[in-house]
Length: 94
Image (cartoon, rainbow, N blue to C red; front, side):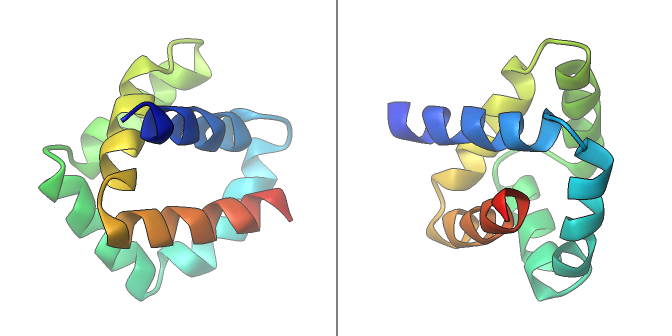
């Protein structure tokens, strides 16, 4: 569980760091495809929703990333979620 939380924190940092808009633009093609659909399904399976994630990301942008880390951590716990998030992180880090 600690590993998932650490990975979630790194994912959130990668997304909220410098050039966040440019990074989000890089993710759009991936999120618009099958991986995006699967990720939305995983959000619901983890007890969340796109609306909750949006609010959590807004809070993270304001300095409180705790909710976003919890959501991302829950997705990392699912093997399919881990695969998708790892792919998204690779795009963010490139």
